[in-house]
Image (cartoon, rainbow, N blue to C red):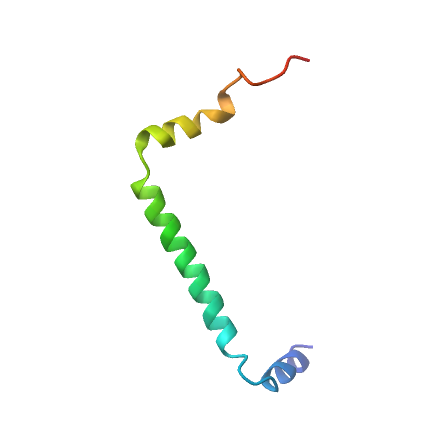
Amino acid sequence: MLKFVKGHMESIEGIEIYPIISLLIFFIFFVVLFLWVFTAKKNYIETVSQIPLDNSNDSEL
């Protein structure tokens, strides 16, 4: 099965760029996410971390 897919993919011209683009998108996304985490304000992180524990918006059953 893999030989069939590999043979078919080799017949498409210019397909070798897609894995490189995918890797770049993956890498850039996580670098930006890493930078955002370390530059986020502590007050914002604290506020967002308390949202799941906030019961003021829950409706009573």
